[in-house]
Length: 256
Image 1 (tube, rainbow, N blue to C red):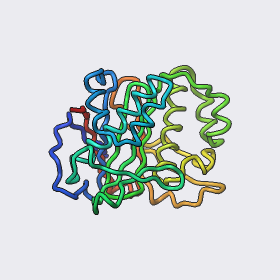
Image 2: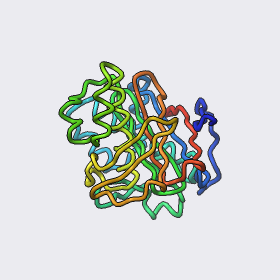
Image 3: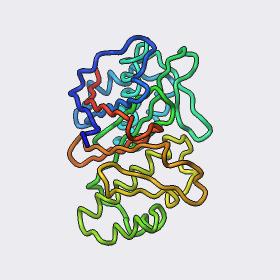
């Protein structure tokens, strides 16, 4: 099987105004927050609207404030690579679970996005369809795997985890975790569905999913990809596109 991920150094040219990626394509833009210094933070803040600036100022934690700022600026600059608006012109609304989407006042953009950020990295996925989710985590970050595993992992996943030790065990946990987060974000339902009812099989080249309990969905609708764009981070992408059709393109992003 060929590599399902195409990579680039961020040289993607802007698409025509109002056009997103092709119907079978998800573009993933990742940004190293180690390069997000004071000058870029000032430039990023100028792109935010008044509501975003209020939220930015309200963070007590400086790392959390920087992650929020980087993420919102990344979304805006990424959307402007495809749509006909400048980064500061985009407006957003949220659904009942808090998932943001492009406000119709921006015109019929045909663009959908999902954002994730953690210590050291922000990631934005762009697609021409709505059911797209992305999650990024530091796989070397300490997690209470025993405690969390009982809540978020299916029995088969727990069995896989129990056979592993050390860093390999921790990385496998984060693979499960990011895949589940990406799926729930793609559904736009937040954490309203129990993670343990979503079971992933990582034995093949590409992850596959099965659903149980209250998660009412068809596994055949979904494709999942995992990438490691930077040392210590893993990214999961969930898309409502059949596996054979999905094309994933990965780009490193920088802010002006």
